[in-house]
Image (cartoon, rainbow, N blue to C red):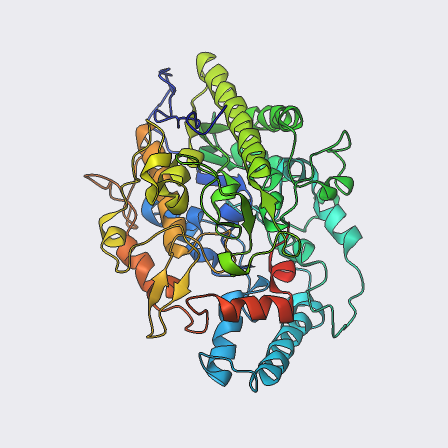
Length: 510
């Protein structure tokens, strides 16, 4: 990407035009779907991993007809980990109404702090504090907040070593060691001598359960957390030479392309050791499209994709002050996009080389899909659209939604419904249930292209086009169909909640 008129064109053919003989022999590997990734596969929504039966992998397993046998971590308590913004706003709405006035604010603040304290108590001292004793390997091996290095090196032994004695601090309401507590529900903790395994070791075990493949389809979706910190922290800090260090790397928000390429090569080496018939690699989305950072002011030039500044979505254009408000600049946003493009070019060449050597690997260009859904970047600015751009064809039940389903920050209309958004949940980074369904739909299309057979729950082959049951998802998607009404069309209430309760710091583990 050299200028605004040359945005990276998406890869539309997952085979890259290279045919591979997958060597089908009529059998079906025992593990039909295994996923390795971050929060986009883990099932995080509105700041919490909670209803993991609605994660993208679980949605795919439902359509495969194998959800009953698909193993995935579950999280209970007051809305999961680390903090469920939707549930908190519903509590505030129930007790204090949809509009907070100055007289009500102190009481709402007390309610919020009380709720957060209950959440903290559940996970640090209550039922959620118990370390699960599990032996089975889950099929969904995704974990929120993880980048490439985490997936390569994190183990149960490391999680246990980092667990500390919790303190009940009134001002610091975040669940201590929430990431470790969440990960301990993904990894088997028994037997003790096997606690030094990574998620790639676990996937390799599943791959050995059949011959020659124990896994039918392996999906790898990693890399977003190698750049998303630039928009969640509104800070661009490029990786240094210690990017492989699990502790020191946390200071960085964007990996230099050469560092990303080095780690991706390690990931690819581990994937080659896994007995999977098909492997689907998902590209890294352009994180600057996520509505957690909103462009303010007009575009920097006619036909440009970029705004002069990017800040929090609740800061209105007329109120924004670059001397006071957190932000990144257009130049920084462009640099982050260029880095992501380099990541994806490296991944594309990785898949190309694998297919040329006979491996049945596929490239799913999630960056291109999100670009086609980007509302303020392309949909509402015809002049900014590159020659290759065309709108993403939403599934019929989603396209029929009123108001339209967009990538804007989700807001309510004050009458029980949604006013804007729909793709992203209330943390402005992770998808809604319907958004996860779109991700699942795209992965399913690649699986179909690979020859994967989709079945009914009784085992009968499905006929006709294979798609996601979006009517089912919309019935479960409370944010899209009936969001909390105290979000506010101008996001003023959410702005107050973040300032008063520090929601973003607690809910976004980046």
